[in-house]
View 1 (cartoon, rainbow, N blue to C red):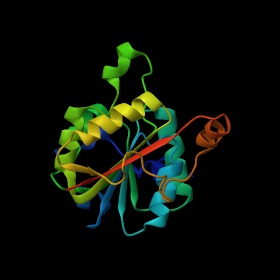
View 2: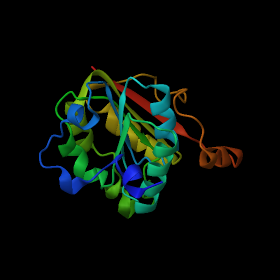
View 3: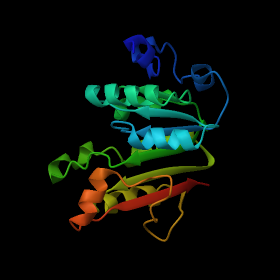
View 4: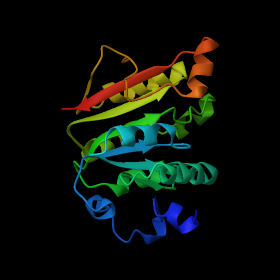
Amino acid sequence: MKNTEILKYEINPREIDRYPVNWEKVFGRAAPLAVEVGCGNGEFLVNWARSCPDWNFLGIELSLASGERIQSRIYSQHLENIRTLRDDARFVLPELFADQSITQLVMNFPDPWPKAKHHKRRLIQPALVARLCEHLKAGGYIHAATDWEDYAIQILQVLSNEPRLTNTASDYAPRPEYRPLTKFEQRGLKLGHGVWDLIFSKK
C-alpha cells in the first residue's frame, strides 16, 4: 500500500487556488454534496458514503493522526465518493462552498469547550450558522449531535434563532438511522450520559 495511493483522497489546502472550490471538478461528477465537520477517524463518514454511493462526501478534520486513519479506512473500502480536508473548520467553512451547494452538513460531537470562559471557541455560533445557510440548498439539512447538555441548549438556541432554518422536531430530534452509535457514545450511554441530536432544514 503506497502512501500516494492513500493520500489521493485528501485535498491539500495549499493546492486550492480558488474559493469557492469547484466540487464537481474535485469529484469528477455532479452529485449532492454532504459535509461532515470533525470527521475524526472516519467511522461515520465512511459508513454514510458507502450507503449513499450517488452522493459526494467531504470530511473536514484538523487532527493529523485522525486524518491518516481516515485515509486508510477510505482506501481499504475503495470508496471514490469521499474526499477529506485537513484544516480548521472555523476558518475554511465560510470560504469553501458556493451558495446553495451543500445538501447536508453534519457536525458530530464538536468540541464542547466546557469551561464558560472558552464557550466563545465553540464552533456553532450565530455568524457561522448564518454563513452556512448561504451554502445550504433549499430543503437541505444541518445536523448537530452533542453529549454536553449545555452545548445542546446553546446549539438549539442558535439554530432556532436563524430565520432561514426550521427545526424538524419540537426541540431535539431522534437519532437518525444514518448516524450509527459509536463506541464512545455507547460507553457514555451505559454510564447514563445523554446525547442530543438537532436537525434543522433550510426553508
